[in-house]
Image 1 (spheres, rainbow, N blue to C red):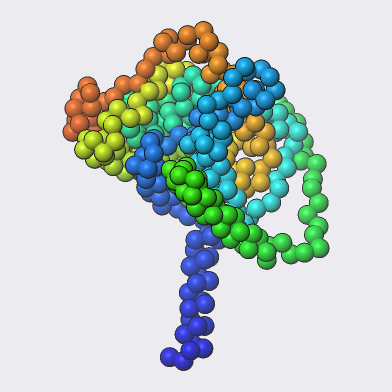
Image 2 (cartoon, helix red, strand yellow; image 1 turned 180 degrees about the vertical axis):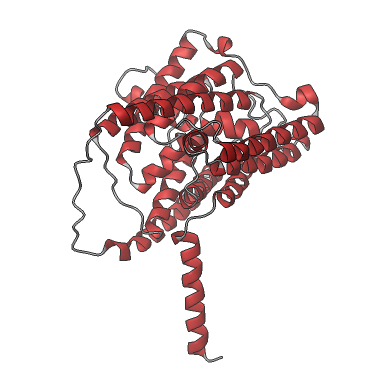
Length: 394
């Protein structure tokens, strides 16, 4: 084969590979596999993956800067692990949206902005009560074999059901109006240069990793990079926990929740190996209150339906350019910090319960099997609902 023939072939292969990774939507199950893999890496690198703690850190700093709190948080947003990984998620989704030429400023009707603020506030309150969000108190809690994660799951389903009922009522009784419009006229074809800026963002994240390492903070640099990869995965797979809890009631489609359940099977399997072998402490991540998870999950589930995204979905949609989710993000940080402060000040934590480590009750083998059975049961239930529409609200 001639050099020209080879380079032409290589160029075509690279183009097809780029299209497959950054232009075509990934299947939800594939995104779920990658998400579990990255959550496991974070567990080995640091400790359990969470998101709400990063929101809380930002909210604490905002209140401190305006004088409401007397003392600053112990760590800055660039030294708090969850904050750093959250920043990575936003940047990863931003880079992915640029690579795929999907980034744009997405306005919304004024009513939607109000829903974003209210929904974000409710998510912040719910996350404070459950000591975590859809990731920490549900996904990672179950991944760590915390039975409280099932209480959070029940609460999220209840909240999503109530939220969907409200949204259906809103469609019939509220005139939302238009977004007002943002001019799409442009003198330069920005689509051609968006991938270049995506490369710049990627390069800056890698440079930041090395800067962290240079200052003996390699762990933080890794969290930024792993968060960056999570942002890419969630954006390319449109991986949304709000979708997974909403669609079984709205359309009957359970594909996203099935992907979540499959991802959890991988997460739990790896967690059992890591914890049972004492590579990480067996009770790592077991701190979510069972009663708080149920109540907080219900409030959070309703809020994420109003906001149009969960804690993780808010971050990657921010990176994609959705203004409504930026407002949800801000209200989440403020309400989560304030609610957390109230819980601490008035000693309400004891009322909310505590984490329940399944292996301490059932032993490792039985606990693992029970979790897998529950996940399989949910998958079968979702398939049955797709066939019968038993849980569909319409």
